[in-house]
Image (cartoon, rainbow, N blue to C red; front, side, top):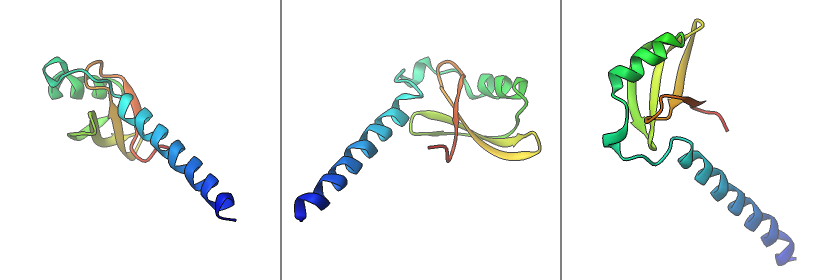
Length: 91
């Protein structure tokens, strides 16, 4: 009976670890001296239609807080390339 319960728990923990590793890697591993400046990212995000209110660094990503298409958004960007890699809260 214990094996029946342990196997699904083990599988879930392994999958959670893989998902976390994927999240950590989506923003790249470049050192901060290779990142684009916040001003450059703000300009790029503005070109993409964001009304940027604030930019933070979180888990190796630039996190842009703003308005897009009339909705509040927390978008994640690769700090080296400026490519949008997700929206905070995405799985």
